[in-house]
Length: 297
Ligand SMILES: O=P(O)(O)O[C@@H]1C[C@H](O)[C@@H](CO)O1
Ligand SMILES: Nc1nc2[nH]cnc2c(=O)[nH]1
Image: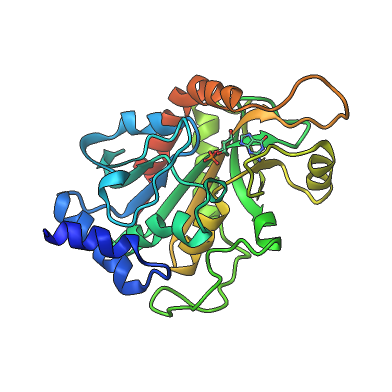
C-alpha cells in the first residue's frame, strides 16, 4: 500500500484526531502545492466564486485529502484552492462541511487546524445567513462583530474534549474574536467602493440546522441582539481563536427570516444560492481589496 493510502486508512479510522494526526495532513497538503499561504478564506453557501479572483491556482479536492470532511450540500464545491489574491498567498476553501451533515464539530473544524499547522495566521470566514434585523435587506453584506454560539448552549463546541496546549489554552477568551482593525478596514473600503447602502456590521448566531428557524426562535434571536442567523462559522472561529489566529468574518444576508406567524412564504436554500450568485462579484471585489491592503504577519 502507498504511503498515501496508509495515511487515508489511518485517518478514516481515527475517532479522536490528535495534533500529530493533523500535522500529518498539513504536511501531506504542503507536499502537493508550491504556495505557502499566510491567509485562509472559507467560502459559505453559494460564495465559492470568490475562487475566481485567485490567480496561479493549485487545486486539491477535499475528497483526496486524508481525514478531510467533504461537504454534501449544493453550493459547496469541496475544493482547496491555493494561489494569489490581492498580491498575497492564500488558501481558499471552496465550501465547508456543517454539523447538520452529521459531522462532529471537531471534524468540521479540522481544516482550520490544518491551515494553522500550514502557517496560516489570519482567517476570513464567510457565510450565507438569514436577516433577523428588520433594517437589513436581502443582499446586504454584514461584517461580523460578534457571535452567539447557540449550538454551544446545546453542547456543540469543537473545543470540547482533551485540550492539546500546542494548539491553545484550555479556556480561550472569546470577547474580541473578530479583529477590529480588519473590520474598520473592510467598512472603509466597502464605503469607498460605493457599497455604503448595503454594508452592515452586526452579530451572527449559529444554530446546528438543518431546518430553518421557527418564528418564535427568530423572535428570541432578535431579543438577544442577533442581526443574522446561520448554521456554520462559529465552530471555525472558536478553533481559529483557540490557536491564536486573527479572524475576520462576513455574512451575506441571503434571505430575511420569517418573523410573522402563519404567513405563506418560507426560507429555502434556492433563494440562499440565488442571492449568493447575485452578490458574488461585489463580494469578490471587496475581499480582494481587503486582502490587498492587509498587512499579514
Ligand atoms: O455554509 P453556510 O453557513 O454559508 O451555509 C448556510 C447554512 C446552510 O448550510 C445553508 C442554508 O441555505 O446556507
Ligand atoms: N439558520 C439559518 N441559516 C441560513 N443560511 C441562510 N439563510 C439562513 C437562515 O435563514 N437561517
